[in-house]
Image (tube, rainbow, N blue to C red; front, side, top):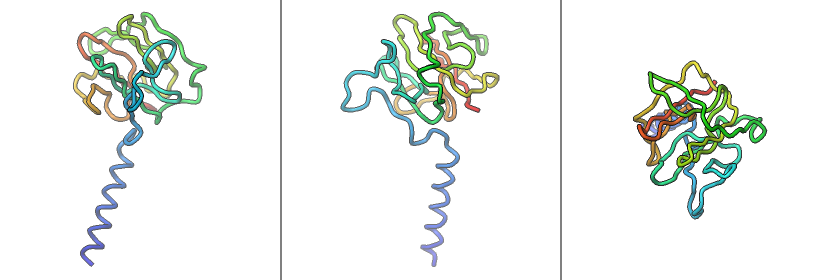
Length: 160
């Protein structure tokens, strides 16, 4: 009888963890093994179709991607951004225009491919410390809105 109670408790805890952790299990690092070249979106390193960026390792040229929050607009809503500046906590950085988040990035040329997403712009945060999958990432449930490469700070926005 004790063993059955323990299994029920363990199953319940696992289910609670899965339900309370948005994006858990859907994240992947691009490029993925055995792929050697990164995914290309408009000539920049990007996430696969129906995926959006949630993290980056500039030195290794890795992106952390998820499909959990992608919208049906997809490719039809994409734009290349060359200079939108967003400010969070007094820090200005390159970011995507209102209502869009990062799909692809060219760090060297300071370019972003931005795509529409259902986000809450009013709750954007500047993140400097979240690490996941070996790289700087937005907190769970958030997407990359902007980046300050030199200071290793991400602008992250929660989804609605």
